[in-house]
Image (cartoon, rainbow, N blue to C red; front, side, top):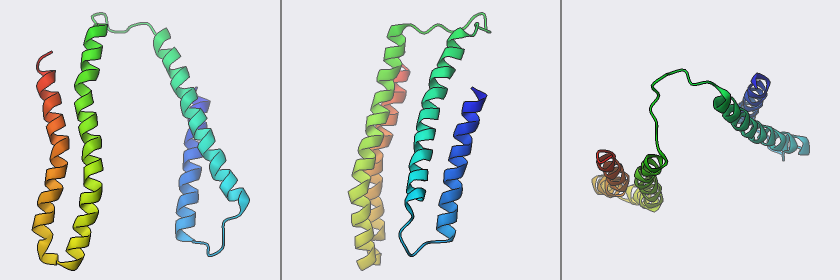
Length: 146
């Protein structure tokens, strides 16, 4: 499995290096075909490598003997309850992101025309971000019930 982790690491390092190189030395003409194919191949290697790491890692974890004698047992019901507790935070964060997109772009447009409206736009951004905070508070309150 170490070779797979090394391969994924080298592939990610190659993508980062190519990105930095293209950022520092921009090209005025279109990129050659081999560059596009190389980036696509790197993405494919990273995707397959991560899938392999997940599969091999899961096998190693399942095959390992338990180290701690008194490990905490989580039943199926408790696991589903924990997933259900995490869902409000996840959905609230997604909703806040969806709300912040249009509000943020409208705020920037207003600030560009009238800089004195900065305070009001911050209030609207805070109201949109409050959606995520409400989801987090709900998850914390539900976690206290378990």
